[in-house]
Image (cartoon, rainbow, N blue to C red; front, side, top):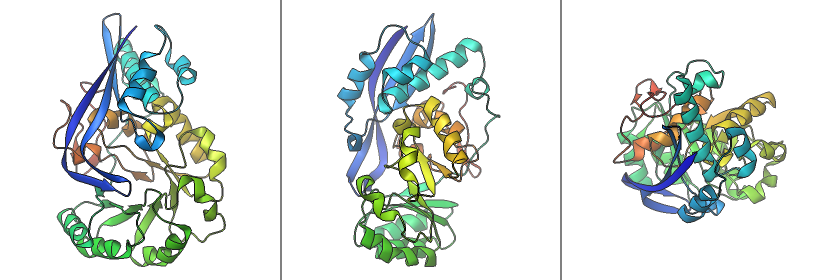
Length: 321
């Protein structure tokens, strides 16, 4: 088995800003696993929030043994970007070797299109209202917030897109006091979900706090081991393959989260269609799908995912799976 790791850069259509900073490019790693003349591939986005860099993730992948199975991979690497890219590449390889689709190998029903959120970057209220108005035709908007002064931004987005469903991602940027102050206004403005309002290490404050809008664990939820720590704090878990360490764990996390009474959101880092392709399988029937990474890019992979009025469609075999 031969594994290669290649850094790739995709220009963004516009500057993308969250509470932790801004970017103009998506820097990803493309992993190819070749065996017996067949090659599978996957993509990951190393994330500084989790102490990952392009170099550190590359080193993790290059440190793998010469031969291993997808099942063995789960214990060879921790949950994170490195395992994600290799795991997804192995699923793609297995599908090509078997002449079947990944969903068939995983025992899943044939996937359909899912309505996806479209993310509005953190900006001034005026610019966010403009972004909202330009995308008011979309059924679901996700607003990046996470500052003590977010109320004018939220009002501006609702004014720009009066009919769209809205979810909020605070990216750990609020305090308990700020969240408590904003919560009644979230209801008034028709917000349907708020992601990670408090820092992951400070979310104990959510226990016993009134949650008039469902609260979703993002940075607080990585894999199945995260679930015991979420009780009493969250109503929804955000499953991202770069956190779970691939499709294998993501499917198991989804099943266990649903069994424990959580709703499921399926999200993404800012990456290409190759990164989103496996996540479309996890997103089937999810309460919220947020796989808009390719929509934020100025350029994408060949054979990209199809986005239309029905949402994000599952990948064609030429792309993945």
